[in-house]
Image (tube, rainbow, N blue to C red):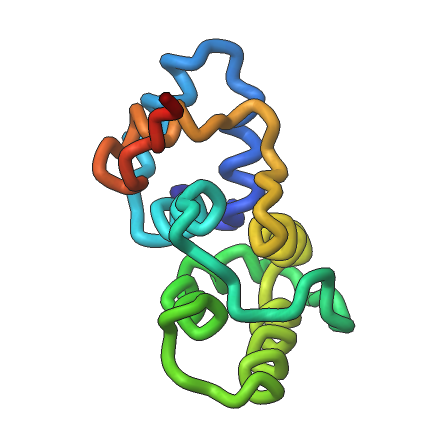
Length: 144
């Protein structure tokens, strides 16, 4: 990813590409821990957030050039999902608010959407993610 483009901004740009093939290729070309982590959080049914539903009270970050924070701190997301480090709920929720407040506003909004299992970029689908990163998500359940 280039400088000064946040993860949400990047995924938004990809979602607006016209062809599915271009979207898949753009994902592959920009493969990174943070992209995989965000897409896995969005589409992997095994990932359950260990936070109360809805948006917590937090103040959006108004500093400029915070787009690199999620890229740098994506590993912190493990604290907010089931199976992550054991924390008291209040500590986890406080850390989540601090995490959101450190992010660029678009990235914070994206994380909140994903937490509610709503992927905010309509032009990017689970199937495209599966094509770009074949081993990222579990096999789809096949209904009989």
